[in-house]
Image 1 (cartoon, helix red, strand yellow):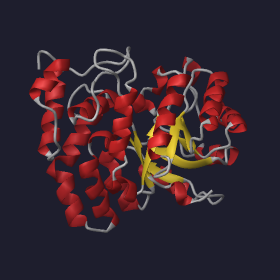
Image 2 (tube, rainbow, N blue to C red):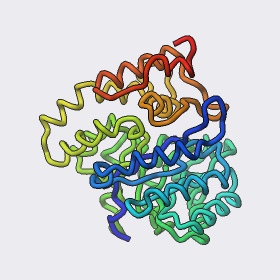
Image 3 (tube, helix red, strand yellow):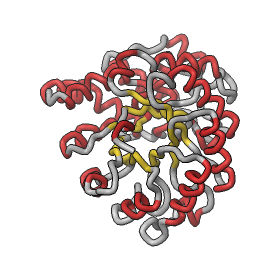
Length: 330
């Protein structure tokens, strides 16, 4: 495998019908058509269906397959379509991976195993990499596809650098590494120094893109921050790619950083994926802002702050009247 998979993957939210937790497949198709715009395709865009931002913890295999089928119908001839695989048991995740392979998905996106505290909060990847590699190998046995990792879980934030080469050696299907780490420099160096194949360094947090460019560790993205900000994200990345530092800094400090940091949570008690979905709704791209329970809702004051930050960077948002349909006290 080569670096042909180094793309700007958007980790898409999943739209629901207003007032329900039922997937709105018509709205999903419209959302995909928005991402099929030439400006995103030509910039090297890619689609990630069923990421954590898309509520993959709380969607069924059948729902994931249908969402992926529609994505392939709409965009499969324009860009890579990867799908998340995430189930509480290896048996079920293998079933899910095979079902996605059977419909022609281009690649898979997967985190370490979830569920028991032994794994979700106590796992040490340095001592026991097989907790994840065994599951990844079980997936590739039924679905020999390229894999992008979602390296979260266990006792560390991200995967410790000592464990990364071990995991890559064990699972040659891994072609991309989502950068969920507070230490971009150390993790990026390990991935760059891995000589057995190219593994793309895919940035997650938009508020850290400039750091990755500074180190030369930006091969693409796997990011939910795209959901609500394509119109400012594309010129920002183009400025860095063309070494136009003046333009990049102008965008960065015009509200770009403030918006993304607020979504991340520095503006209050926000929850990242909840904020992705609310911001996408405020942009008018999906019909409902809420996620499946037990995931929380944003408070009205958080929605107001989010709307104001979207407007501050010149992004169109829905009317206050439309906001009140979901938030009567707005």
